[in-house]
Length: 523
Image (cartoon, rainbow, N blue to C red):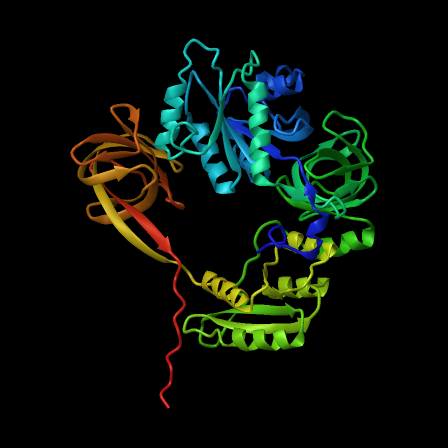
């Protein structure tokens, strides 16, 4: 459990926070035009070539139809074309709600599919906006069918995914779209602590000839104040100026707000997490820790027998509880994994506990204790894993799960079919397009392959695109001819697929490896 997931005694200080919404989709499907209509400003017309070149965040207000209250929504506008795939992925990873914009006259495209995969991977709530319904060629039912084929079932199509048909050009359906976002927000129950030190994500950063380094930050928790220090994984600095998305000067800003600041001493990396510190001494201490966003890597050590060993720091509410936990945790010894208690103490979690866990790649087992806000901030920033429970055996079970995470998964391979290569159309080190006939079994898009020549393995790869009769397919069966785009796995040098080669198609299934009990000695 990370700091974001940990429930503490300070939960009573949490308040409702506005949602962060990312707009993603294929180039020219109307993402920026939609935001442009919502904000009533001409953003799209000022972009180079009419194409969004930078990630930008904007804050708007909209009356909730359920409560009547005016509520804020923060939008992140990301480029949709292929050259900006990494920026688009960053947007999906920081958003609560991800809106997939699909043009009704064009349907699903390559970047649409990529954006959808990133949304599902990020865990953001998916909302579909079917745009350009004013076009004569609009075909909404085709899009719903395309989504259904990918397992995305919209409301009204047997699923629960929210969607809205609209025209960003005329504004039809846009108010209902905003209502839909607020409805999704109410279902998420988003909360944050306004009294905490600010933390969040760096969206963009660049150097300006006049003002120096300019960074766009998205605050996800706490309050950021002018004059404070901001620390990221690669840079720090004192805030010299702070503005909102409209360019107005700010003295302070709170969660879900996008802000533009100056003052970084070095150029921070976009996508990195940041935290705020009130003074330079605290900021330098945080920078020294070289914190990172994301999960901490475990596997603190390896025993003499060569099995991985999980380090554990115990913090509980009473000495008797600590002793009971020590006994139970020390008993978690298996053939293929072990555990070692680094520290056992009583009282609320403190900074030294977190720093020890980080330096030793250990987990913290917290039983019925509080986590002060500064410590919770450090946990989030460092990526330390905190397992929290009010029942002893639940805590022990959580530690066993972490021990299991140290083990490499068991991978099983299932051969699906074979393809005889009849023609090659394009071949380079990044992708190869070939045509052939399926001689056995079937071919599936996304499956792995072994390319063989005269029975010998040439290299391995993955099927990134599959076509039959010039139509994109998810699967083609034996006896049919098809075309495939192959993405090689790893460096293949100058090796290329040639006519006469055989391709073996297969899938791999990975499942967690089980902890193996020690053999009981006979007495």
